[in-house]
Image (tube, rainbow, N blue to C red; front, side, top):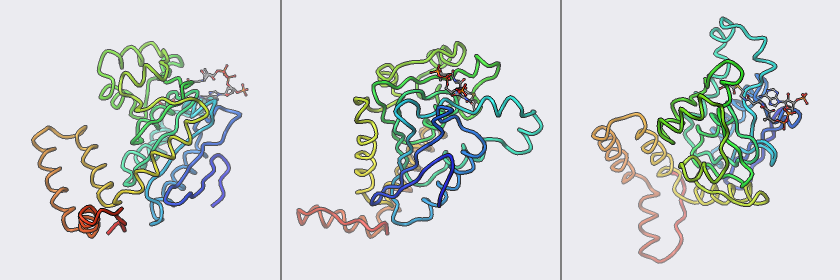
Length: 258
Ligand code: CAA
């Protein structure tokens, strides 16, 4: 598939999506949202692809929703089209793991996109924020919910109510990104982490991702029950037999996703 606002590639078991609107610091417009949904759907169907990487450029992962486009949108148009909501739905419920390769500006909808991913790797130049308050609105892509659950109420309040950005090291201390690396290495590091995930059993990875996500939706007792059901289910997989056999035979397992 060829796209205008993003590019995609396949590298072994990885599906790589690169946001590509440098003239607007990768601001998310309708075209990009539609193309992102298309690329995510393609990689979802592709059985060879086990893990995704979403990246922007070194200067900007994404500066958020396209303000120039949004300036023209009415409340009714927004409600009738859902605007970006199909993207948030798609990424939020994506069955395969997604590693976000962050650098430069990660703002507004860009941060919300990143927070819908599963592992966030940041270059030392990354600046993260929810600046919607500066343009008279508020986060609308899950920012108030995902940020609060990650960094806690008071830091989330400060970020959402002042629009102030934080740097990569602070984001790491807050648990918002898992690793900070030199700017030359953010993409290679993200691909390295994604390749490591892709080398595991795709069945176990998928269910483990579901279980961790449920921790943010369920109470502890229900979450533990849910986890146990998935754990039992994995004992029916060929990958479980292969993984444990390979361990006893002192060799690397060959997982097939079955
Ligand atoms: N939408 C549309 N265009 C954007 C944009 C955005 N979010 N962010 C940057 N651009 C454009 C600029 O208009 C500029 O284009 P022109 O050269 O044609 O004027 C180009 O990208 C480069 O930007 P700047 O000249 O402003 O670059 P800078 O280095 O001086 O500043 C910045 C960078 C601090 C990120 C600044 O561009 C900025 O504040 N951008 C807006 C960030 C923002 O408010 N994001 C939230 C959007 S709302 C949202 O995301 C809602 C939601 O929850 C879904």
